Length: 216
Length: 216
Image (cartoon, rainbow over all chains, first blue to last red; front, side):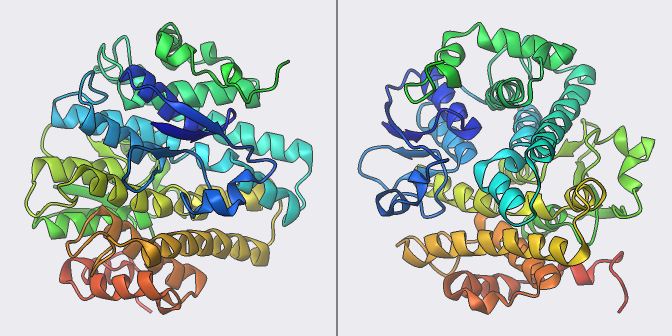
């Protein structure tokens, strides 16, 4: 499969992990969102919204939106599963994933930082504080749930990797890289993060190990 | 089922529609997010993140995050389905839903408007412009996809209501109520919006028809 990706993108990281967990080979095409590669006509033809990731699987229309792609991969390649079998546990895994993917991640992407700078004249320090604020809010929220939920195990929901772990690991990686936050500050989430990053599918797709990442 | 809701909330509107489409009776408990009801200990016990909606279905743990709740309802009560049967069409419906739910809606909720006001000292006019900007960006993005995708039908994906229609209808309702935008400005999305709002499950749960909505 061909994956349009960007080393900094949390959403692209999620899909890279899922492809690796499923054992699916990927051909990566890197876009530089800070340089505006996402606005090229050739990319807009695949993804009119101009965001990453986009996954091209064979001849069908391109697939967009990372969480929709995770569900697609899980339905098409069910082994190993990325969701528990029981209905309420599935809802719990999806809700944990969305707590960070919908309530934290949207605020830190380039188009939002650009609006803050260009339209609201928010300076560098206040933009950095904004990024940390939403990253921290997401970390606190998911920690509060993981710390008290009896379903929390080696991973977010029991002892199998689910979409929740993929989103949590990507979130805490961003919080470390772009907010300077140590995952270990969050006892439950940090423990699960360490368990995730001990898995090659997670570690090998870390942003700093991407071909388009800065060399130093 | 007991639904914790708020008349202005786009996320709660999505779940109200889905419950109606599925023919599931709901007991509504209204929270006023502007007054801070979401921070009460009794609500935090159900939803530590302090957001709406929360769905309580029987004795199990409460369900949170609107898109996770939609998937749960669709898995537990499969008729009528809220997703197409074919895998790539399912991914398309989920991606359209997420284009507005993840890339537009997060920016207009109370906690974000509060941060803009309290921390960044953004005035009323600039906050209103911010809200319209992200609502418009979501509308333009989904319109661009719907207008050209051959799978677009009476609804977002063919002629059956899916999670995409629920999210689109909730999004364009917010854009109208809180951004003054006419859905008819978007030919494909506006047509689908009208088809949705002609269905009682959508119309009956409109924000202005909620018990906690302002009377005038």
